[in-house]
Image 1: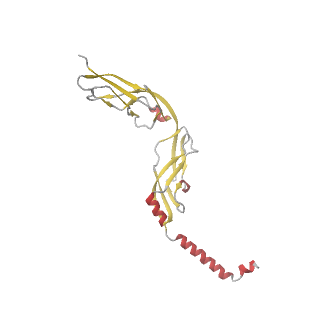
Image 2: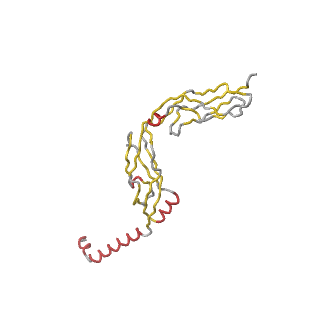
Image 3: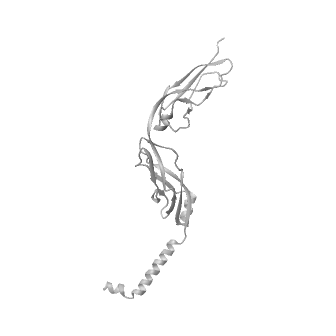
Amino acid sequence: MDLRRTFLENWPIKLVSLLLAVTLWLYVTSKGKSELSLSVPLELRNIPQGMAVVGDLPARIEVRLQGQERALRDISSFKKVLGIVDLSRARDGVNRIHLSPDDIRRPAGVSVTYLSPMEIEVRLEQLVQRTFRLKAVIQGRPAPGYRVTGVTVKPSRITLEGPAGVMQAFTRLQTMPIDITDLKEQFTLTPRIDYQGRTVRVLDPEIGVTVIIQKEQR
């Protein structure tokens, strides 16, 4: 069989048929497409070991998606879109991270036509540890005729871990106020610690404060 003759025979008709087929395919694939603007959460992943993120970061980014109407309806209903920032190559200090459509997790067949911001700054600091003597802060007075005869903290010194800049700002460590108003007997509790609004982690598994209250001797 002469393939060349087969292709060239009545070639104008065949060319028109091809163009019509392509046009029909484009029409079918584009039919029902629409766009959707969303504010999506931003998630940090692969933070280097021994490092911590410090400072303010945008919690969400703005994206515009394009796809079939049904797919976009599902997205808006079930929130399947997420911005992912990979920090595996980030270093100590300020890192400028460029965002692209590849960083937006979304269903197959949906494309990203716009996102903002396209660049964010992520500051990393080394995690360090410091040990502090924990002071118990007592508030109020025991019941009439009773007095506080002792306060013990175990362990007396606890270790905190946090970003270097945060840990340098700590000068003391104490509990939140422990109320003893109208109490008549000894008690032990796990105290809440005043971290002065800073994000740190306590490495000691168990911390206890015992307040000894006894009746006054007459």
